[in-house]
Length: 299
Figure 1 (cartoon, rainbow, N blue to C red):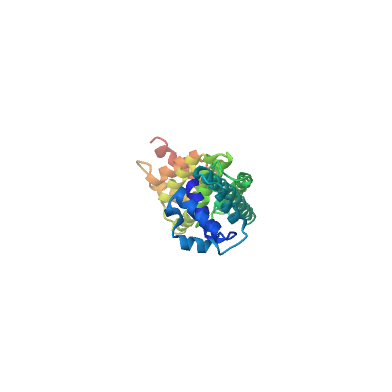
Figure 2 (figure 1 turned 90 degrees about the vertical axis):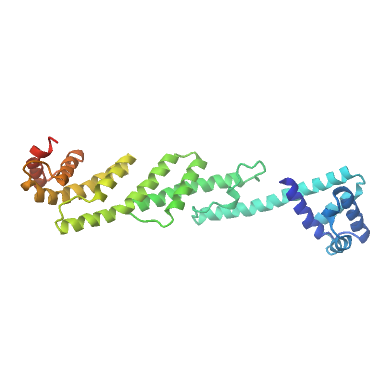
């Protein structure tokens, strides 16, 4: 990799060589052909022409100074040293720009886009200041994304870029040593919170139409909430149970319990079990539950 970068930088510098007389350019060309092969130098006339275009550039002077070495190993060693100096200077300048970009990302709260400078933090050649700046970015990203996702969850907001936000939150948690499992749980909470308004609307329709059955979405999503075992999920499951099994459950009980003679109605059974699990209660509700107990509590 360093060899490729070297040749690239060398090519750029050579194209702009100028701080030399024609004899200096020709001498450098001859040394380059002798030590690296003509493929690295190209046509001599074109090379010399390009060499004469720009004068007094420091990088050109440093390159041409290597012609003082008549032996290839010394000549190539000189070029390698120049390359390392130029590469270091390039990396330092690039690092300054990367740090500006990282700081701007923090200021603008751009948590869903990892700054370019933070992609190769494990590289041994990572310039000074980059790791520190990226550490600040990932800390800020973890806080920012957690806040945004928590607000979305609490407001049952559907997020178009939810998947990207959750991926970045998980990555930030890993980079900062935070709990990745907590990040994953929060994202599942966001998903479930977004469908709760739809479930509530469906239940309200059932109540309005006196449709005496429990929608699949009620039991399915309450079970999904229970699987999370988080405090928010427990609270959300309790509230959804009140809506599905207490409010709509009253319609189910009033419709089916009076006519039950030999067995517990399927939907009444769901309400009966939910009443015990979620400790649901209400005067009219409790009366119907007591009435259903003889058939529903024994099955």
